[in-house]
Structure formats: C-alpha cells, structure tokens
Length: 319
Image 1: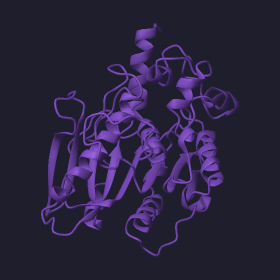
Image 2: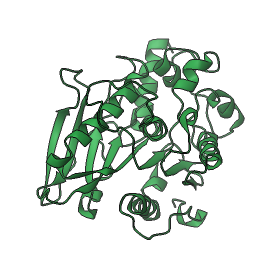
Image 3: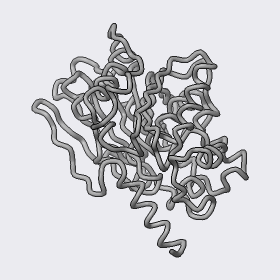
C-alpha cells in the first residue's frame, strides 16, 4: 500500500473506532437549546467552531463539560457527543472542533481547545456557565487533547491564540479516554505490548508523527512539547483515565505512565482498567463506566460527597 492510501486508511480506521464514521446532530431534551458552529476565534479558520447545549433558563450558573472528539488528529466530528445525558443532570455541554494536522501541525490543536475554553468562559452568562467549574474529556486524540488541557491549561505553557487572553483556560476536572500521553515513549511501549498491533509505519505516515511534524523517538523537544506528562505539576486538576488493556492503537502503558506522574505530583487520579477492551468498544458504554464518569464529575464540579475509585474487573468487562 502506498503512503497516501495508507494515510487515508489509517485516518478512517482511527476516526471510526470511536463513535462511527458518520455523525448526526445529537437530539436535545425538552427545555434545552443548542447553538452550533459558534466561532470561538474571530475571523479564524472554519474548523475553529464549537457547539453548545444549555438550558433555556440560564438564571442559575451550572458546571460546564467540554467534549473533544477523537480521530487521529486528522478526522472525526464535534457532532459525536456521548455526554448529552449530562444536560438533564445539571450540566452545560460543549463540543469543540479544531484544526486537523493535515491543515496545521501541533500546537494548533491545543491552541484551539484552549481558545474554545476561554471563549466559553467569556460568554458564561449567556449560556448559564459557572466559570469556576469546568471539566473536559475526550477519547483517543480527544483524550490526548483533554489530558493536555488538564496539565498545560492555565499554566501559560502555550501562548494564547484567538483572543480572550484575560480569561482562564485551565479546567477543574479531566476525563481522558485512552489518549496518548507521552510521544517520546510510545514506540517502545507499543513494541513491549503484545496487544498493540503495529498497524503504523512509525515516522512514515503514522498519526503521531504527522501531528508534530517530526520523528517519534528522534526529535525529543517536539515529542515532549506535545505530551501531557510533560506538564504535570502540583496544580494539575483531578483525572479520571479510562483505558482498555488490549488497545491496539494506544498502549495501555501510556495511561499507566500518566497515572504514575500524577501520583508522584500528589494529584488526584483514578485509572480504570478495562480488561480485554480495545480502542473503544462496548466496555466503554457499560452502565458502571458511565456511572463512574458521572460520579467523578459530580464530585469535582458539584462537590458531591460520592466515592470515585477504580471498579473491579467483573463490573467493567463487556460480555
């Protein structure tokens, strides 16, 4: 297979593994409204838009959950929003589109996500958002960007792009769903993991190296700059990490490494291992997994007195 065809195949595979290849606008519960394709950068790229779902009554400020979709940083859609049930649970929900790596390489993607968060904080009153209670999450490439928002957001590690620089772009809670976390170690971890199939020609058309415009395991500065583990500090917010131990695209060790870095910094982290699960699949839709995610955000964004801890294997193994 030629390089061009291999790239298209990989983009389709990665985009399709979470949420399917075709997306439709999510339905809204009664009493809620949607604003779609809202430009969060004035005069910006067509991709710099977001959708926001909120209650018609905005008199009471609610916590905000921001979803960042996956797709190998080269595909996917903001229409794929698995958190619409959170609206009736008392949250505002936003879904962010961002520039893909075939248009602009890193740090364009994190620049966009941080710009979207600043925009939402600026317009908090319009949407009934509590600026002090913002969570972020995503799967695969979206998990990576969510983790990076969590560790680098609010720290000044990335120069604000797109305006609204006087608004905070950090968050108070992060749900990282099988996102890559360390581009410097990922090749070695993939080689050491028998569950990771080498579908990538490393540094020859793989989504990782296309994102950074450089070589994995070769250009250390670029690898570290894109890696969420690089920015972990004593100010990093709580993390919930969901990852299958048979993931063939992102080694499970990537999430273990992030967990270890967060614990070493004294941060609050729960790593939920999903036995036998791959890069997406039915395990991630199990009621126990959804309830764990709900409890995590309720605890850290609503102050709910609930237990958030990793569940036993029998509760998170899809039949």
